[in-house]
Length: 137
Length: 137
DNA sequence: CTAACTGCAAAGTTTTTGCAATTGC
DNA sequence: GCAATTGCAAAAACTTTGCAGTTAG
Image 1 (cartoon, each protein chain N blue to C red):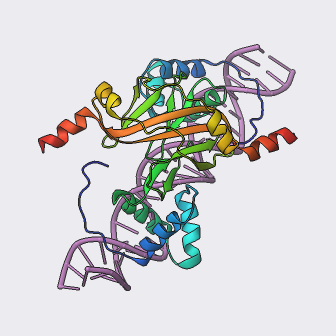
Image 2 (image 1 turned 120 degrees about the vertical axis):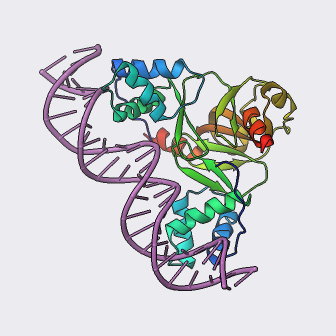
Image 3 (image 1 turned 45 degrees about the vertical axis):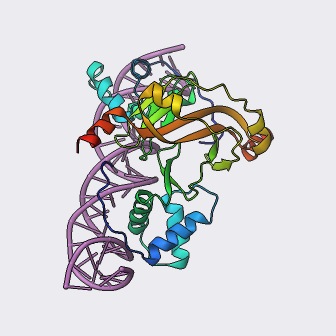
């Protein structure tokens, strides 16, 4: 959590696989989903290894940890700046196109004293599917 | 999580206290911090009650649940639209002034089909304190 | 009165960690 | 060879829930 102690990272087929899984989906899955996918290719992989590699990949900057609304960690393999929309009903998270001008961090750095690395813009609302379902009732 | 089943809410000194605690801080605390504050006034309050009331207050729309980067739920007693900045080193979350023009949701609703209720803009970076600490080393 | 709420404790869920064996460099 | 990684299982961390008693309306 604090000053990232440096450690050389080794490759492993588990780590490769986890990164590959994350990069091949547009979902923003949690550790357990990744674990289930990974077991299809490496049936003996353990959940502990998935967590350790997700943590390692996030510290290496190869993936991004994000937070769902419900207290689980989610992971995102797409490092490009992009924005999210989350359904307040079914909790799904989707990428959205980058419709806004890029922000300049400067005014926020001046106002807060933080050195800003990145930003995230999230929208919340009802997805079409949930809207349809609740209209049926 | 889904169709909020309606239930009349009763007042209780525990619920009042929890709301009061959340509204009197600019922090975005987790359940345990709230529990500790609450015990100073109601020493017998239980953590389960804190969770139940946080859930209830969030469903009532009086507070907002948010997500920290590290898989904990955080709670925010300030319902006005405002943006956050989170330190990537010590994980603290702070409010930031509203420096940007309000977004129109329209283009996003058209692009996604979602009916958007709210948005959140978050910045990530190093807080002044952590920057100072890591400079010392 | 009675449905909602409480404290407590047990259970559930998600994440982390210790350990001995294995692997990458 | 040695440090990083692995699978396994136990532990820790966080949240929810069942229950019997209490309280608000």
